[in-house]
Length: 496
Image (cartoon, rainbow, N blue to C red; front, side):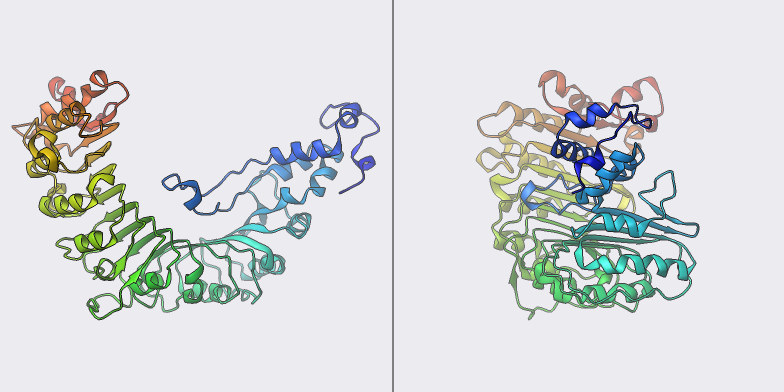
């Protein structure tokens, strides 16, 4: 820490129009605390779906605060430069013109000086390449490489291609690194970053990887790091081995998002003799697939007893391993999201029967009309509504504690008009047997307005729910009032 005498001006500070007595009247430690509180991050990893203890570590928290503080006056600049923890988040954009830190209005070329201000503290670093000049890119990397040993988080983003070979990343111990985020997809950059993944990364808990191009022949050697991971977000073609084998190595995972895109192992058949495995800590699993990818072995061999949130996007039924997976896991599933799936009503009813009384949120959706023919929801039928109706199903009512139901499709609804709102009202009325709804969504494609038998009762009933049950939030589309006055349904946004 610098001597207090250097922080106390002998005259009025013209830059901030502040008298010297203001500095003298506040203790140095208080000034330091004030400076630390001004550090407002302009970027973070938002993970509101998971409880605090199971969220991703903060992504690169960057702020312009230390640079702005140095512009006020000399005492502020001296104090700011002495507070190492103000300088531990670096967002470095390497462009053709200059080095820009934190996208400030003024070009900041003192990258080495910025890093020096952080002392020996751990660093969060964003490297963003928007450059073709390889020599200039490598000069910037040479300034950054000596500090890799104290990185706590690293995000690499490459826009326009660098013409030439980047200087290889050094092999150094990285005992503080918790998060690596890779935002590029070309083979030569994968080769460049590969040495990083062979370093000692004992605290690496989160890995986020963008999908590769189909021509990629190089894979990051992440296998040795998988045993440490708590969070994984990746694409199937990031790996040279099957994703089910990746998960088998990730026994500590808490959250996982996998996009099953075509890779070198695509088209392979399920290995029924592959050993089963348990993921004891996994709470949130999201799987997005393409129809041509055989992915069912994940449900065929994994057991997830702690699973709370499950999202399947673009999956294709029949999936005979899904219900046995839920039965075997015996998890207390709280949220089930099926988006773009063609699961039948009978298969969904079976899954909800296994989920039992713990399910609180059910989301049925179709984001794109090409995911399911006509953009419809094959599972959203009168049979499903009957199973959710406490009057019709009696003691066997599905998901009695469900308080959030979202039904979103791009095509017309196939249920009987009025049946949906009838079930909703029945569940609200039977408070002793079912939990009242807090959130209701009912949306469908504009084709619904053109049907001779428009679902007017359901749409109007959902729109009126907040008046009948204060505290219930709803979203409905198309708005039945737009059909009455002849306005264009696509211009409406819904209600609630």
